[in-house]
Image (cartoon, rainbow, N blue to C red; front, side, top):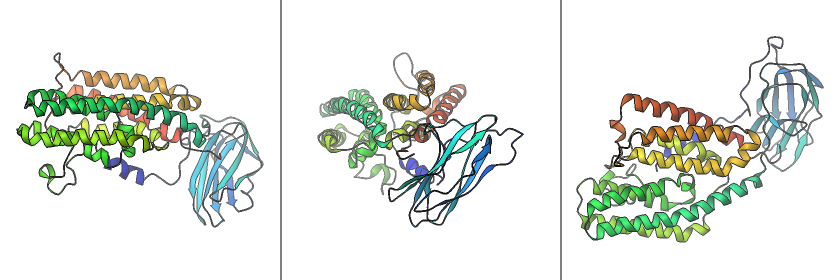
Length: 388
């Protein structure tokens, strides 16, 4: 599993996140209501007492010497817009489209102080007012993380057994059997995509690619399933493949021994719901990660299974905030899985990604693009908003 592109993408996220994209504003409300708001150590400013429904935009300035997070909330404590990171002296817009109701602005200082303004009323109607998000306390992620860790704990022994079968094939010199048993081992690991950041050096040791290694595929430090794949499909002798499979088994055993002390970052799960298949689009659907077996579409299928597990453990939290989303995602994942299975013949052999037909590729691309678009809403939906 290659992840560098995810890290780059995360590094360029915009500093301001509006909880819902600005919706269409009724023609009778062309101008924005709002005004300046000053965040100070003793308070969070004063909004105007009333506004018409429609576009609302506050220019929020941090007049303190510390960082602030700023929310626009309603009487039920739903969040309608936010500035997650306002630095001292900076001014940013807090903007959204509001329907009738009572709202306030809440400022959470990095010192721990929380200030909420007096409420202001919004009256009238507007087209497509934004829907508020239910804030997510940090501790609400505990149950999904524990469920995912339990799933990982049950999956890792299967990975070890598959790796041991692969090593046994090579030990007796049966490279045809090794080729057949390589894929199940690889797929067992690829289903664990949401946990890679918890695996430390074991990830590269089990599934690293030659990207970035000084000597590429000839680099003596390349190890893991892709290194075994390259060796098996490039005519390497059993005696030379065996050290790789032995090292693989040892790495999986090391991961299993170390796993109880490893932590799954609660913030990782909502991100991985989208990023696993983003990685799939870049490296599996294109065949870029293939090292000779021609099975990158099988890997893509395993990635959908891993994504489905992440969505499953997050479903209770998602349902509280977007009740129709889990079912929609389930249908889209099923459709993509059907597209991928169409690349496998009756004997179970997968068509290499570059060899699939144009129409089939277009179906895969279209269904994956739609799924990624919907999955991409989860990180913001489940962003921690403990003090909102």
